[in-house]
Structures are given as C-alpha cells and as structure tokens.
Image (cartoon, rainbow, N blue to C red):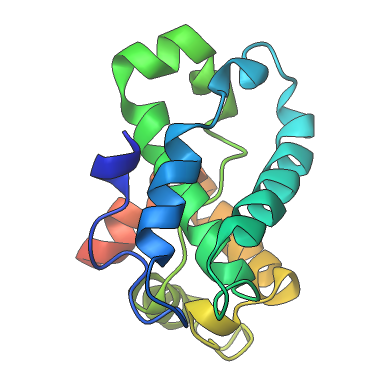
Length: 164
C-alpha cells in the first residue's frame, strides 16, 4: 500500500533526494494493528506522533518538512481505509470521520475557493505547512465533509476533481 499510495509526485521538491523512498519505507513498516479498536478521539494523538516519527526518518535537508510527513501519512491512511481488506483487518472504517484529508496546493486552492469570504490562512506549500495552518484547513474540510455527507478522509476526491 505504501508504494501505491505514495506516487512519484506525492512528495517531490521537499528539500532532499530520497524523501519518497524514506516515506515508502516508513509507511511499509507502519503497524496498523495499533489502530484496531482505538477510540476515534485518540487518532489525532497517534497521527501527531506518527507524523513526527516519519519526519525524523527523512533525509537531511527534509527533516523540517512536517507538512510532507503529514501529507504522506494522510494519503497512506486514506488509501488504507478505502482498501476493503485493510479496513476490515485493522478497523479503519471507524476512523474515517477523524482521518484528515491530504493537503497540497490543489486541495488547499479548492478549499480556499469554497471558503469564500471566510479567511483561511494563506497556503504556504506542503514543505512549509505547520500544524496550525493544517488545523485551520482540516477544520474547514470537516465542515465541508459533513455538508456533503462523506468522511473527511475521502474529501480529497472532491477537492482534486473540483466537484462542488
């Protein structure tokens, strides 16, 4: 799943060669069984810890890229949750509402368009994304996902196709 989820363009230009390979290696070794039975309210803590661990595994020159690590994990978790076998085996269906939508320039641009006069922070790019800016986008994404009746984890399908 790590190789499928993290494509060649997922993490390009993130400060050092080898970021994609590091992310794939880290994600391939990630133990999802820790999530089986986890209460949804504890997922955010797991996600924060896992983001920092992936970030630390990046090569020199990319270790400060919190946004790249978060994007990789969110893509991987969304793909895993949508995979029937993985979702059943690790109880990921129960986490779909609390999983984050992967953020990048395209998804952020669409969210900003949908926000209208609501002021989302200026998009800094994946490489400069901070937890605070990410939270603002994720909070708005949660509102949109609820309006559309879909899990926030799946919202990027609409963001990428720009379906209103």
